[in-house]
Image (cartoon, rainbow, N blue to C red):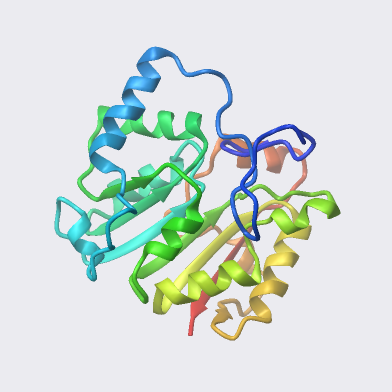
Length: 241
């Protein structure tokens, strides 16, 4: 199971009701006092306040000059997000992760090595997407989301027509929605859902385009395990037309 996700068989876990919202456990093992303190300290200064209107220019959210803003939804332990922060100092990043343990791990890393180009959201991503101004993001990343493999759970998948509407509203024309998964059915689901949406164009000309990792890709322990077990990761890119 990937970091920050819930085993689909655990039907007793608290969930958010409604199409496209967060379903899953919000905390795993109880946090140690130091972990809880790290999380609280980082969120005190970095958490977005959705009770106030979003700024027209998202660059104003960051303490350093940025010329682009990207969102990662469900970053787990934050391996990709941390690497992107260091690699792209001129880009502002918003990380959304409701899983308490994943956010705590990420906050510890930020305390050890602060970054001026990050803001955080520790709840369901849907209110965040609805809060953001139209055409304000240069990219949205959704890497290894919970696949909800059982058919009766497919409605819980984050990729849906309703959420693609949200993505289309907040992405700038030409902005990218990037997706990664090792679950064939979820890859096909995502392709089919995006194919029927008028605002997204799949950026692929051949098989190598969806088997080649995204630029600056960081291979996590989860992905390495998936490959060892015979599952092939797929990397999809969709352009906001």
